[in-house]
Length: 180
Image (cartoon, rainbow, N blue to C red; front, side):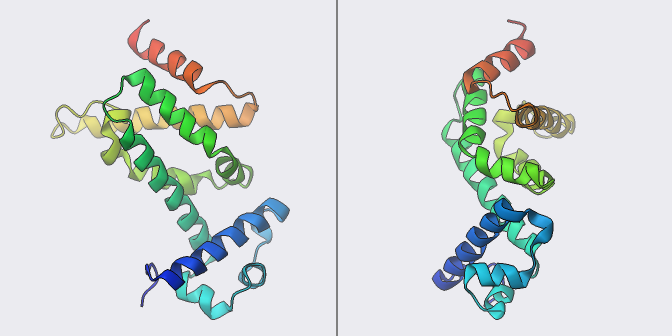
């Protein structure tokens, strides 16, 4: 089997490794973590680690990709809702995953989440901008612009540590975009 496998034993190993990495980051920060330390915490052999990942950063990407997959599924459940309701759902998702977002932010690792987030633009065009004419090249730029703005709001809220309700953020943004 290859890395990225979905065999049940591989999924268990990935879960153990991911949980151990999160625990270690919370204790000492990301830069202090070695594969040896990670394997000890996960109580797995190094060969099990290398069967699933090449580096500690790969584990972070795995965790980030899982989070983004959850995000996409959550947003797809809200497709067809009004834009303010979509925005509220967007902010609610990240509020529910604030511990993960903060863990990445406090260790200067949000770029890993952001890569996956930008990668999901085409799946969530209803959230990030008009897709009425997908052949029009500017739509990708519009989606990136809106997605970047929403991400910046998440980063800003995390940085100032004063959470605003999801509904209030949705109202602020949708009113500014649609001239309430």
